[in-house]
Every structure is written in C-alpha cells, then in structure tokens.
Image (cartoon, rainbow, N blue to C red; front, side):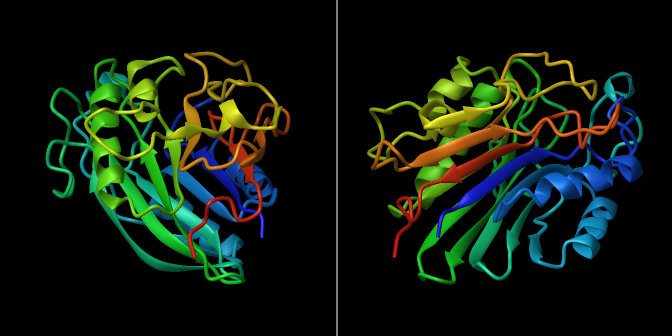
Length: 283
C-alpha cells in the first residue's frame, strides 16, 4: 500500500487568533484530516481537542504521548489562554491499516529523557513523540516522529542537533519519518544539520519530501497567521525521511489551503505527503 502522511500545527484550543475559535475550526480540521492521510502528526494539541478528535474520528487510533510540560513563557508573548501542562505532539493512524508496535517520547533538551526538561535559554519544554507502526497488509514497519521546535532564534539548531542524535540512536535501517513544525527557514542551520552527511556518524541524512517530490501542489510557505496571507520564513512545517533509496520515493506533496470564509483549520496550512508504495519500509 502507498503511505500518505500529514503534519498540522493544530493551534491550541485557547489561542486568540484570526483563524477562529476551536469550535469554529474543528469542522475544517476534520475535513483536511479526511483528505486521505493514513498517519497524521499534530502539534499544539490539547486534551479537549484530542477528546473532540477521538469522538469524531473513530477510524483513527490516537497516540497522545505525554504533555510537553509547564511553560515559562512571559505573559507578553502569550496568545490567549495556553495549555497549563504544555502541548501534545499527538500521532493519529488509521486502525484498519496499521498497528503500533512500540513508542515513547523524549524532550529537546540537554536531558532528553527527563520529562518537562527545557533547552537552556528557552521558555517552553519541547517534546518529541514517536511510535513504530506496522502495515497490516504487509507486516512491514516504519517509525513516525512528531516534533515542534522552539521559535527563539538560537533554539532550532540546538534542537536539531539533539533531534538528529536521538534519531540516529534509534536507527535500524528501516524508514524513519520526521514530521512537524520546525520554526526554521529552509536554508537555516537547523534544517541543514538534519539533512547533512555528518562525518562523525555513519547514519544517512534526512531528506525533505518537498525537495524531492515528483509533484508539488500549493504554496511552499505553510505559516499564514490565521489570515491566509503567507508570511514568516517559508516552510516552517516539513516532512523529512530516510533512507531515500529510490529517486521517486515521494509521489506528491500538497499544501492544503482549505478554509471557509475567514475560518481556517489553523494558523498553519497542513502538509500532505504521498510516498510511493512500500517506500523503504523494512520487513
């Protein structure tokens, strides 16, 4: 079977944003989720939002993962009422197609195994939720990682180094897919580190699905602030993967610009990636 994945920064329920309230946005979120993705990575998800999604999407299993932890963000930077215990980087998968065989979480800090730990010089704990999925039809397996990197200018590169090191430590030769909101421009040092051939490691670099896709649909930029007007540094939201053993591994990447009037699913556009059938999925 072909593998289709999606990443979406959900925008937490209490946010004050032009995209609309969570109650107004929920129907649009459900519409984009039903675009055909088998696996979906959500950032900024809160318990009430996950409750609503579980109720509306019985065909999906939800790997919530732990909450990221308490925020130290100054009030001046807060966008409405944020979640008390941080965000979930939740992973949804179609129950008819996949089973979860393993999984855990780590934090983008100097102590990744310490729940709620914070990278020095930042205000928010950042959690990476991951799960290994097995394709029911073939028995083949792959691993999904869901990340939300910090937005402070000095944080993405430090986070990317931790992220790359942790993914390398999990490497077994099977497909790894890293989805999320990277809060970094495509040519940033963080992005380059994730995609670099590192001399100190034998592990392959991560490949950006957008860059190698046979077809790209929709705008390259994904952040629009809830207004539909694209801005910021470009593609904040990405799907990276490894290994790439065939040039046609990615059939199509689509930036979904779905909205209804002034209401959008989020302040980010969802990114939908269609991989070729059985792309480097290990038996």
